[in-house]
Amino acid sequence: MATLNSCTEPPTSNHATNLVPLDKLKEACTSKRAWVSVDGVIYDLTAFIPQHPGGQDFILFAAGKDVTKIFECYHGHRQHQILQKYKIGVLSGQDMPSFLPSDDFYSTLKKRVDDHFGSLRIDRKHSLASYVRYFFTVVCIWSLYWLQWSLPSNSLWMFYLLSIVHGALLAQYCVSAVHDGSHGAIGHNPALWKLLVIGHDFFNGCSGTLWTYQHVMSHHIYPNVDGFDADIETSEVEFRRIKESQKYFPFYRLQSIYSPFLYVLLGSAVRIEDLIHYFQRRRGPFKVNPFTPFQKVIFWGGKLFFFLTRIALPVFWGAPILRVISAFLLADFFFSIVLAVIFQATHVVDTAVFPRVNPTTGNIEVDWARLQVETAQDYSHDQPLTSFLSGSLNYQVVHHLFPAIAQEHLPGVARIVRQTAKEFGVKYEIKDSLWSAIGGHIGLLRMLGTPPSSH
Image (cartoon, rainbow, N blue to C red):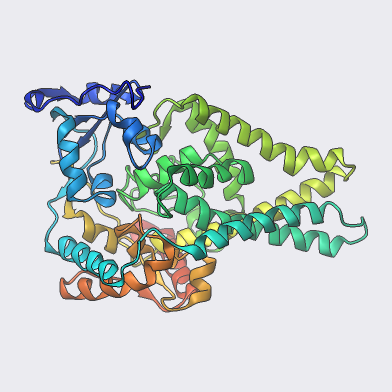
């Protein structure tokens, strides 16, 4: 990998008219050759990797891909000017859909949000409350772990109560620390972001690297777009039907009843899928770039650490194996159901749009910012307890439009988004409570559980 001292001069613009085949772009996906496409122009960022203020990881995730919308979300005009120094050609070919050019809705919204933070003179990434929350969540996770396995053998009710609380705390770590770290939405230190995401590997046994591909690279750019949003990726036969493109089976009639109970298996399913995606080197529609040596250590070390702490160590300390397994399952069930409720109630709902790719053009015939608003729903605005428990993901629309803003500031930005959406005729769905939002998810399951012939 290049270093600051050995960094070569960026490519000059006289190569800007070169046509770069799509296959060549895809091959440039390592630290030795990292190319990206933005608005159909290819940039060689290999020499820029060690200089990137956001750290090397984000460039290595993006390498070999079209990152137009990701770049727009996280960068402004100044960064776009810097990018031009690394231009090497024009992309020939396309394997990901593009969107209609942004209209005045998005530009107006971004200016108003910039003015909002400018007038308050605050850093949109700064949140002391978030730092405190991360610290106490980690302290509580480990304290409860040691307390649980130190209890007398006859304190069963307290033992299993601690399992439930432990699972809920692990979910809290995900919706706050892991989520914020994956977006670089807290502070300006890439080492902190990496540390927060690594917690997903060691606390939950789930790959933070693969989560970033799924969440940041796929879902945030193509929410609810069949074939491109990894969150709604399905196989030929699934336990539930969440989009019209899925084949219908008669057992879906009852999916609104049985599906919520199966959500307790989310954690286990993700850990198994991690192994599949790791070896297949794909996450949803995206190619997973070669893991760096550090990422490999974290991936396998996290799996091993998770097994040792959740299963092996308690058995070594003399706890009965059935008690260990039951405690693990109870904690994991609550961990899974909390995350499932929070995430399913924002996008997989009956009020959200599920855009289609135009089969002729291969593109999505809507503005990207409008898509972010209309494919999600918010809930429980101005209810601090719900915002705290959900990591402010009840402001889902706001977060999708501005993923690099710390969760503490999302409620203030929501007022701006609401007013601007109203002015431009963009449908912005806000439910009054979490229960109403969950009802939207159940409503979708009921609708798509109905035989297609009876619509």
